Image (cartoon, rainbow, N blue to C red; front, side):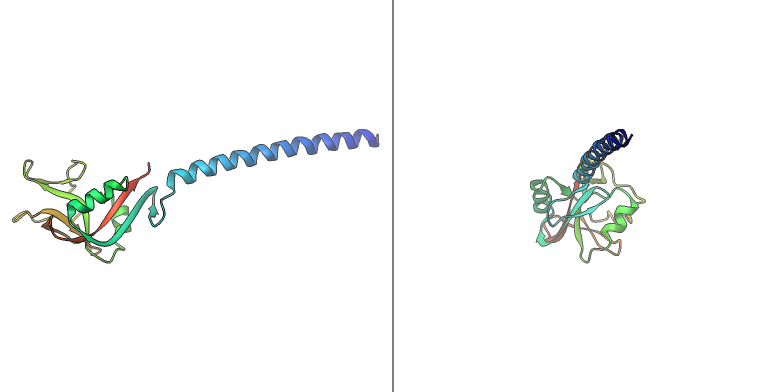
Amino acid sequence: MAVSQTTLWNLISGILGVICLLLMTTMGILLKNCSDCCSCPKRWIGHQCNCYLFFDELKSWTESRDFCASQNSSLLHIQNRDELRFVSSSKYFYWIGVYYSKENGTWLWENGLALPQDLLQTIQTFDTKKCVIYSSSHSVLDVSCEDKSHFICKQELM
């Protein structure tokens, strides 16, 4: 009887060992997949599976846009109030991906979508200078695209 109990316990411990190994492998795969979708490059800040890089370097709007593109990102495109609150922790005025389209007579995001009026305070269009800077006080100003300013690059991971 003692021999058969030992054999039974060996079988049970072997099965439990295999189950533990399978669970650990599954957890490793799940954690790797999850961290890959939301991991940001070095120096970038992650927020809701997007990556942001706040630059203190001063560049024109076009230089900033081109630099962001070289980093597989774009100038900041604010999509919702939560993201607006997140970038409001910044301390400077920053270029964002908004410009004035003379053809359409309206402000557009860099990707061609219209700027929602309820997300950012209305930008005065009396003397449009074509590009927009944004500050942590929720101020948006249209300034010459040739002016130099800090900028925020955004990399959308999902």
